[in-house]
Length: 369
Image 1 (cartoon, rainbow, N blue to C red):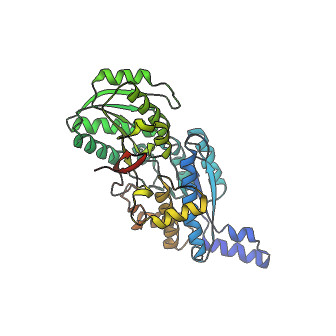
Image 2 (cartoon, helix red, strand yellow):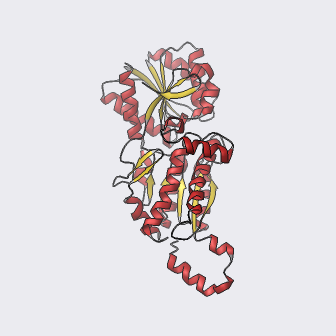
């Protein structure tokens, strides 16, 4: 699947002056994989938009070593089966590299596809530690992994004096991994797991779980799945009179959580990735994003833009579209973007945690004191 600049040059010579515009435009193709349909489509659209902003900016400066960059998007719908189809589509299109991935459960089965093809893959949002074990060496996690989020969660629990927590997940790769890691870390820190529950994605009635949480005596609830379920659970906990703390995993960093939860969301904590609204120096990006797409930049927009810049930077440093050279360039990355620093460990995970606690106040996420 490697397409070297040299081979492209030879192909161009054979085609001579009849080289088509389409062939010229296909020099470097970046695949974007994200949920473009389903409950998390808004997050996927943000990721695609932000990556394209970075690619457009690179093309406006002349592309990479004089070659233009194109993109192609595949919809994984955050569904493992559809993700395999989406991943196979990108490989069949001969992409140079792939960026994206929001749901760990959808990313996990594609790692073998991308690994077998030797295609560089920079993962933007998904962060289950299961991805690290399944990585064949070509994938890089630009978001901090679940164990780092678990550490941040335990620090928050201790700061707020929570001694007994109820942990609730949806059984998928992301939420079950985060729940397990956090429960272990909290117990190791002297805390108690008062209840451990698994719900079903798309569930509307959490009354049984709410009853168990209240009877467990938990000081706080930690919801590790996504925002749609998190918002409904929050409302139903408060409606049932639960007065304890509520803490959410990063999959809940969405304005839709605040809209659905309403006043019940006030005071709820969230473990947040680098969010545009809370990043110094992101004002120009935020304004440009809204001007271009007519909507506010979402939670992962800044990190997605950084990953778009990062892959351009890596290909330029590789001085080739050779995928092995790009992987080596990614390993050596020392990148500073809107969302912070991107440097990888020897396992291709982010060196420094990017999770920060925020709290819902006045229908906005603000930094937790």
